[in-house]
Length: 409
Image 1 (cartoon, one colour):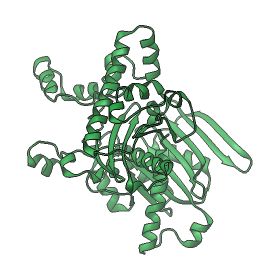
Image 2 (cartoon, one colour):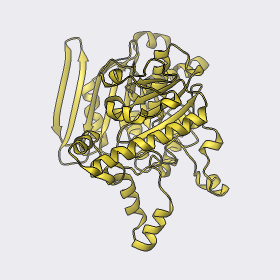
Image 3 (cartoon, one colour):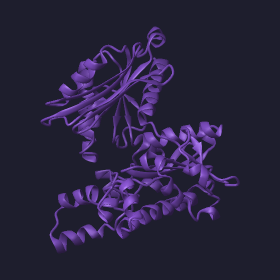
Image 4 (cartoon, rainbow, N blue to C red):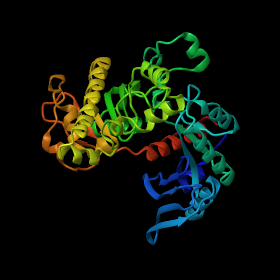
């Protein structure tokens, strides 16, 4: 099946990336000839009394920015608005971000009816994210029925984990029947920065061992051996692992049983608290690291504790992944905190000189170009700050998958 004909590919290489959330649609339109962004935007508060839409569109006349306030009764109306703004960009393909692919999807996949049903079957694994992701697919397939569309999964990059890393020590039947296992998330971000740091180092990704840290309101760390994810901190859900903005991260499971048995808390209440009221917010009342720094500087002991805990847990995982990998070529910071917070980077790496990780304080403090090294001379392990671009990674994977389909007929 020819998806991108030679004539089509020569004429246009525009890939639209869609990320459909429960009450929002985020998009970027890429010209893949030079990977530039032709348009981008966000439609928010879908289903609310007053929605908002922000667009930035590049044309021959220059950059046009639109900031609108209007109601969007549902996702269909939001998509129709989005496509009316884009007009007819001569799309080659549409790439969709999917949070959870389960075990079925280990790579990007061309979307057809069978894929849609398989995504639907994975909804119990990601009940908050997969339904709006799927809704975006269904509407886009209807409105742009002639355009090939590809699903790119956050979990796919971690499907290379060895069984010793993805299995939990629970009864065999729990895995066989309920698919209880580690899946990992933020895969498109970890994959993107891994490729980018390989370019910065001038080495093939397949020759590198890396530890990548995606630090934002959600946070995860991944051990990469020869370009393949072999361990990651998030588990069956994004709740496991590092301390995050509002998520608890690693937790003794018996705490849940205790709160249920002694204090009468139900499962839904506990799920909400651990996902939305814990982490940094649970310790000091805020999940904004900038506000936490300001409070700590003002003498707030809870804010100082939150920062200390955040950095301490990161160092523990770095140490564990150094032990897993044996040899590490680079440590890579990305995400909102990882890219912009020099103080957190310094705190995380403080005291790791014995592991051959040494920061250059001046380089770390500077706001430099993308892909900048911040390690000191003599540091055996390179340290980089790489701004992530998950949408570009999705666009690249989308185009790559369609080319594979074309080459195989």
